[in-house]
Image (cartoon, rainbow, N blue to C red; front, side):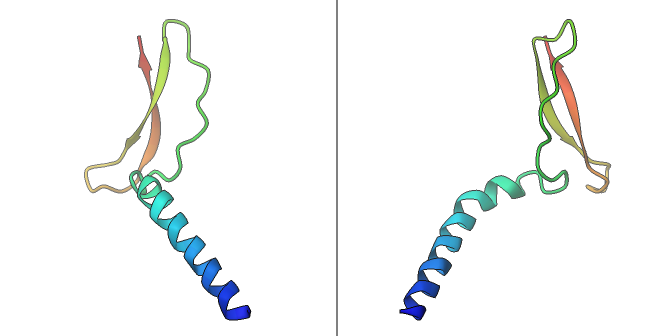
Length: 67
């Protein structure tokens, strides 16, 4: 019974990694997207953009205004 349980757990983790892995690695320099703040006056919405330096390091999230 124990080998079957271990196999089921492995299979579940493999499926989860195949579903969420590509989504999390798309902006791996910035990490997970932070919670969206309230848009300032004059902005209809805010869009998070991952910005890195020219070497692709020192990444950070910036919020851009959508008018």
